[in-house]
Image (tube, rainbow, N blue to C red):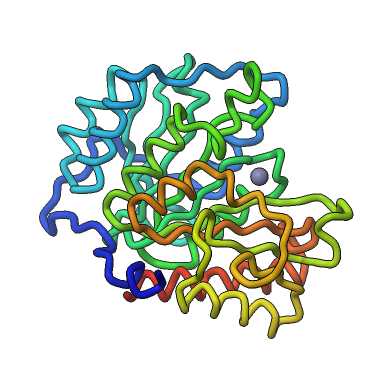
Length: 296
Ligand SMILES: [Zn+2]
């Protein structure tokens, strides 16, 4: 299984002389993302895109990943989504953002950030911003710290809308799933970031790591577990330990297995996210994994 995962094509290749999106902004990337997620409410509105909308979104994101900005913009505009080339004032680095251009359903579908100066070689997925506190901060940090990244962010609190509709880790009808699936189709490996509270079933762990539906782990994921443990974090390894696993029912994990794309499901204790030594160790260890993927 691990060999099969290594054998897949990974990364996307954009044209070197590609034109940039027409919209450009100078922003603080961190504030841009966290300002968006700060608006999410547990009882907020959420309506998933319909079948046609998801199909259009998939094609638009596909064209964007290939560097065809003009066609991507044409496909996304009727959905109320636009592409903006952002320059981060903190780092000078450039990112392409897919985000809603106004209020309406698409404002709650989430966002995509792509490193604009490198081919996309990995994704960090944040399906439960706000409800899994500080996973959105961690996602931004990873995008800033490792080259070649895509950050896929949900656009609503997991309890928004009706009957779990906005819990995008368990909903294939979401924009979030559509975007992740397009990356997986291109062989781009991804890590999905979750948090758990200090409930008894996860004690004494600081991190629960799994490969979603897969029963084995590629070498670089084992190396992530090793590094976290060497840094003093207690890690449950879903492929060899008995862990309380959310990852098995995760729909992005199942889709990854179908596409033979590597999927890592990481749940972190509260003190291993946000600020502090354990959170820094965890972020540095994940950055090591992403850098390995970027240089594959
Ligand atoms: Zn979660």
